[in-house]
Image (cartoon, rainbow, N blue to C red):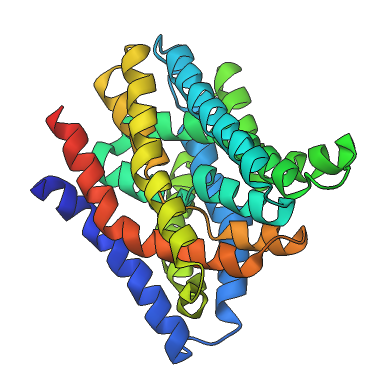
Length: 303
């Protein structure tokens, strides 16, 4: 438990620091949108590309890891669809609840994997991202658009232009082609990648909206507990059924124990979802994960 706390508490300190900086107006209101955009389009893709370009894609556990991802996504989505049929949720609410259960804070996830499992863990994290990022984006758009028809192109184009997906694809192709990063390119990407995570965590804190926690307390608590406790349990059971090795199991469970992504708020607003509820879920899950994530990973380490 002490090792887990030592690895995770600096991450949450950065999130709190980002929120405090934003509230105090430092370094300025215009800083955060630009920093987040630069991270999303340059620094973070560099991290993903460098991780996947050197990943052992012939690892025999990878097919089982991908199968575990599909199981978790399938079970959670099916459960939400059944709940929607029973409760009659409109798409504006259904899409928010789905994002609360399936989307994940990528910056916090990769920083936690790096601190707990090092370079070996980052390899599996990059593989998980290569699958989850496009899958969760498509499911989120479908859920928020469930009350109206959207063309296939309207779903494909945003996913195809996503810089994280493009970086994962480029890194995997670079790897499979047998290329290697040489002549200092690996050091350049390493510098960019090392900058991405701390800046990303500060941006997560700056995006927290404490005012949005008012109202719908039952929904916030229910959705958050399912995301932070029940979904990681499902991920662990899937890993056990498929006999995944220890580190692959740990990284899989960690990603499904993360709070939802701050970018879910932007997508929700763009597609006419319940922005107030989405902002509340993002904020509440992020705050609660400071307690739940260390406990989940400590419990996993004891099994």
